[in-house]
Amino acid sequence: MPRNKVIILDYGSQVTQLIARRVRELGVYSEIHSCMTRAEQIAAMRPGAVILSGGPASVGESGAPALDPELLKINVPILGICYGMQLLAENLGGALAKSSTREYGPAELVFNSPCALWKGIKEPTRVWMSHGDRVVSPPPGFVVAGSTSTLDIAAMADAGRKIYAVQFHPEVHHSADGRKMLSNFLFDVAALTPDWSMTSFVERVIGEMAASIGDKHVVCALSGGIDSTVVAVLLHRAIGGNLHCIFVDNGLLRRGEADEVANYLRMCFDLNLNVVQAQDRFLSRLRNVEDPEQKRKIIGHAFIEIFEEEAKKLPQTDFLAQGTLYPDVIESVSYKGPSAVIKSHHNVGGLPEKMRLGLIEPLRELFKDEVRKVAAELGLPDFIVWRHPFPGPGLAIRVLGEVTEERLDILRNADDIVTQELKDSDWYSKVWQGFAVLLPLRTVGVMGDGRTYEHVVALRIVDSVDAMTADWTRLPPEILERISTRIINEVSGVNRVVYDISSKPPSTIEWE
Image (cartoon, rainbow, N blue to C red; front, side, top):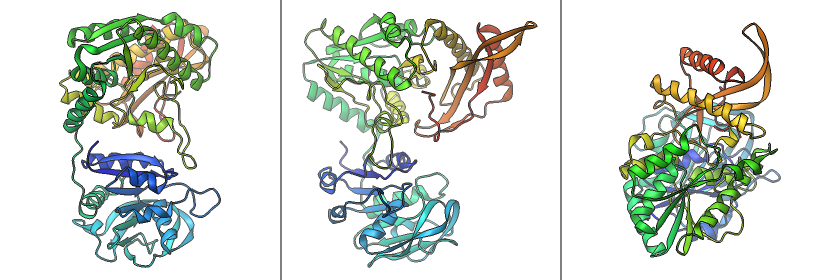
């Protein structure tokens, strides 16, 4: 683990993950933890600084998440953001009030007094507000560091105790100098050293796995996507031939993907690779299942069963490795009070409580874009590095409703056209992810002067950096028209194509 670490306490903000991203971009490792985490637990993590996130609640109302007052005694620099600022004010003797209206959007911040956060920033500076309450009196020892036309106390600071607070969100790109403010907090206030990079990560994780695994054997759940491929290459460098990769053809892959994955993994890497044909097992268990959470858990349990069965054929295998990422962990764990579980990831929420194999997840602390950087650091080819993400449960969560061979075939054919057209138009490398979704409904159409009553395909094409937030892609109309025309003309059973223009949040990238 890097020597420098920032702990972020999640009070339920939709952009808490952005705080972690911004801190890591500045070269400092960060972790998100529940706001229910006790001060002694935080102290045991030995953080170099603590950041309190925003949140939707009002401080002091029934059920609102609170601040463990002992946190203020562990002698580390603290930055409170939005709700975090209000918590600091309440706990340190300040006063709060309800705003007459909720303030949401841009504001011009001016500086009322010198503050370490403002170093190198010219005033006024644009910041982004999102709050319903406000601090009306700072705690003893604090100075008012900044204000706006609607907010007398938009920032406050106690330089002696290294406690700073801002009512706005420096982590969002709408705050023009937010990155610089976070940098000032990390390096000028907390005196941290930027030691988080993908080069240091690769060196550290290979060494740690080699030491912890020793001469034991590991089975790796290999899907062919970038996450599991990076895991396999890291493990291969750590333990060599004691790594055994298993690729499961679960019948839920894209068209031709099973052969493509097996071929390029064998050609590009000197890996022990075993391909398991398990289409019948997965599809039979998914029969008549429509609930997406149930699908994910069924698939996760079936994967584990197969890996444990295959592991028995290997010499004393002790561990299972998989490509779990940090967003998987964040989205699958409910931070009691402010946040809710968004969805169970098959390699997090789908795991059985008792497993014979130990679990190895070397990418568990990385965001998706960081995994791409690791892949480049390892020298993986571009067609792996920039391949669009594909969910662990596969097409089962892109076939909405019951998963059948017929519906999978329709989706595969439609999805293949989406990929072809994105590549042919040079948009494949410009977007984060593009795919088709088969909806659980039929609509009336007219084809060849005859009435049809057939399926609907939705197109989901998004721009993102790390999959924690995403916006729908403004694809040129002529490309959308070409995709739609081809799907309706070439895919039997489809008579309508729609385009998903929702962003994350509030929507997720995948429909299930």
